[in-house]
Image 1: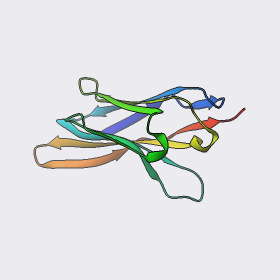
Image 2: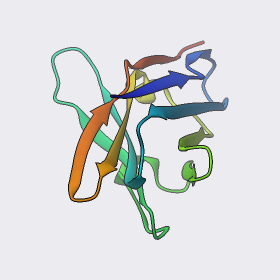
Image 3: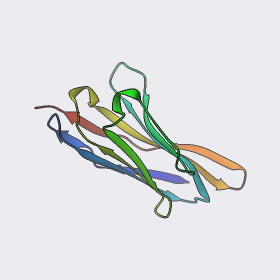
Length: 120
């Protein structure tokens, strides 16, 4: 079994910064992709940022230039540095990792979610 544990959410004023972390533990051979999604009530979950094991990244248009995703393969951890936060960034943020547990078997795992609230 693989578990993802997130941390770093909270309440921040507009223009502020937060850093989210997501650490994977369990039987892990490799991680091919790490990503952050977010969801607000009544809307579909959307991709915020993703990074592959090769270092390629992609971002939602609304966060480009403000958010940075990074990964530490040695620690099986993905980070999301969020700067210049806006009220519309308020959401529950979920970590997602594609984990190879044995050769040929790769599964998608989700964290429990962490709330980010941007408000004055």
